Length: 69
Image (tube, rainbow, N blue to C red; front, side, top):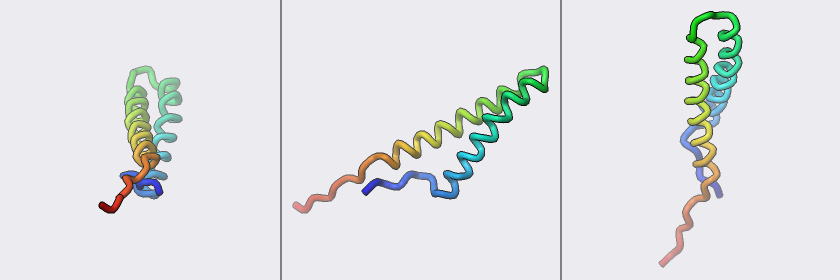
């Protein structure tokens, strides 16, 4: 059995939604706005992606076996 991650299923769906929105907003903002404020969306997308990857890594880790002594 696999260990649960630190995100619930609902939080995980919202994290994916936030990542996708930020990832699609960044190039659009870069094209429409002359300043570098679009870079904030890139940073947010990278941060959310890091959280999703960390949750995936924790979910893939097997639970420790409890051997009777």
